[in-house]
Length: 116
Image (cartoon, rainbow, N blue to C red; front, side, top):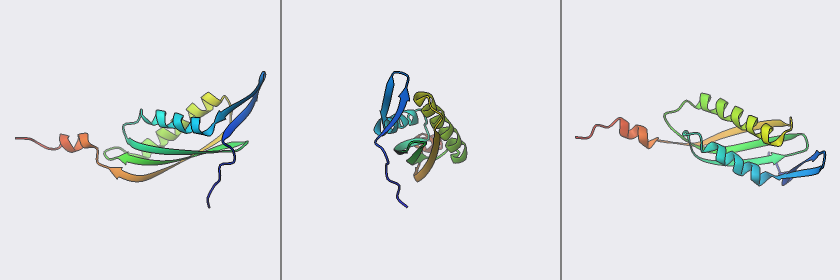
């Protein structure tokens, strides 16, 4: 089932008026957070927002040599925490990761070789 983006913006009310945050800004923010993870070679986040929840789907090219279970738990927890912090709201945030490809970590390949 294909999910449509219900809104291109997340809008919430503040004391002094409404604030709108673009879905694209959130996707770019997730991309910047992912740069802090050496396990991620490439990420394509997609954000779908409604009034009560935010769904994040991320396609990832993953580098071998790292534990996927530990990475996914840590990454999802960090993304959820960061989004709740910048939004200042307690919306439900669902995060789904799809590891579409696993590449060799070039550093690990060279560490195992002995050059003569």
